Length: 350
Image (cartoon, rainbow, N blue to C red; front, side, top):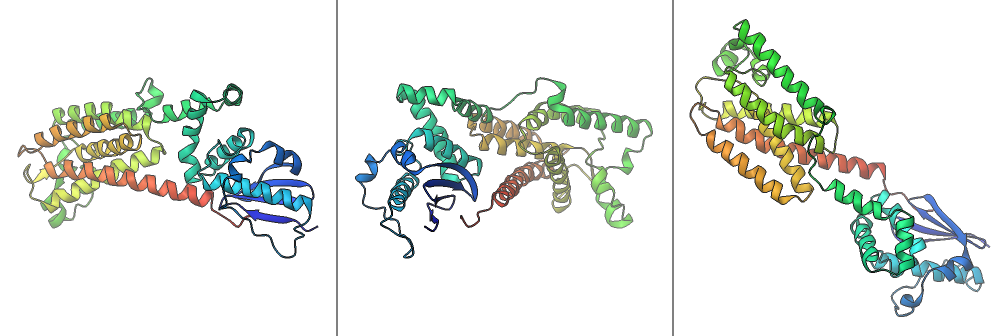
């Protein structure tokens, strides 16, 4: 008898091999079981009420073969389960939950949505044997993990804010070097110096130079509070932190030129970068669905932006630094999401 393969959906396929049924997830062998044993294990009463499932079998397969008949019944049960959003009431939990967990690992979007809900549903109101199974197999840990991931974490040690600490240290050391040598004027952003003398470096160095100590102190305080929280909640690498910091500062400087200079002919400071970090942190609170944090961040940002309307402060760099931080962090989320999709790219099932 030839092997018979049936595709359940994009992710799951079944293969009949003699008297064995093999379950594949994205071409990876997930489970192998005896046909009769598997047929007896999985629940079929819900399927009998449905007439929507009818598997097509190739003409060259002997449809009178008992193994083929059992295999078709099994595949129809899996099809029914998949078509009904992996409802674990429709397929025995010894099979449905491990398979659902595997689908979550390969980022099947529907499985990812229902996995935690299915665990909670059965933990709170399931059969006692079902509940024991979930606890014994540590499925309750997934609920705890999901809750952990949705929290806004607060730094508790130096290791939680290493990058923020070194950034603050760098800004302090640089400021005192520039101040002691009275050379901060060569680092700040000046339209005339850039356009007439071609001192392009000012466009970059102004993000780290501070003309006033009070300005440096305010930025350090904002870094301690906002950047440290962003650092510990950042889902990606330190590289994304640096990218957001630098791009926000550069875009802030661009709009410093694009609009009238509220603070005179020159500007200096890391405020645009810091506002970019606040914008990125706002995206994290939205992604974690911590909307009260989002509201608080927006209120604080609004207060600071209102203070920035002072003619001595560059409002445009602050505003567009904040918006840039939001946009860049959204792009980083999108890029990482696409990388994961390519990593688990969908191939033809066996």
